[in-house]
Image (cartoon, rainbow, N blue to C red; front, top):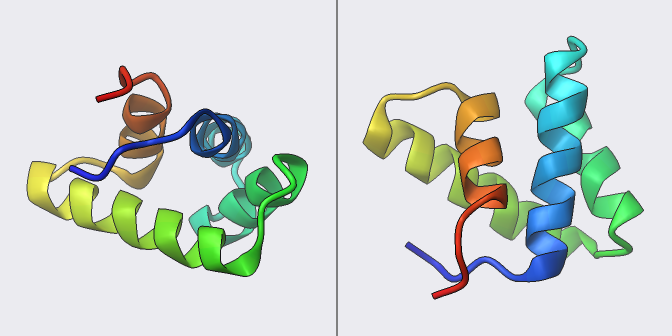
Length: 74
């Protein structure tokens, strides 16, 4: 798994919060990335990371985003 920075964690936690409120993954992640003052490249990287991890684990995107946001730095 790719290392997740503190800014990544903030964006993913924000995305997970918005997804819980019914927002779709892409919109929620965009909002999280904007709030963390990150760029489009970061959005693409995080979207890919969350989707790959969710597919590998067979879990939902929200749960995967939250797990990555709470992961320890490697």
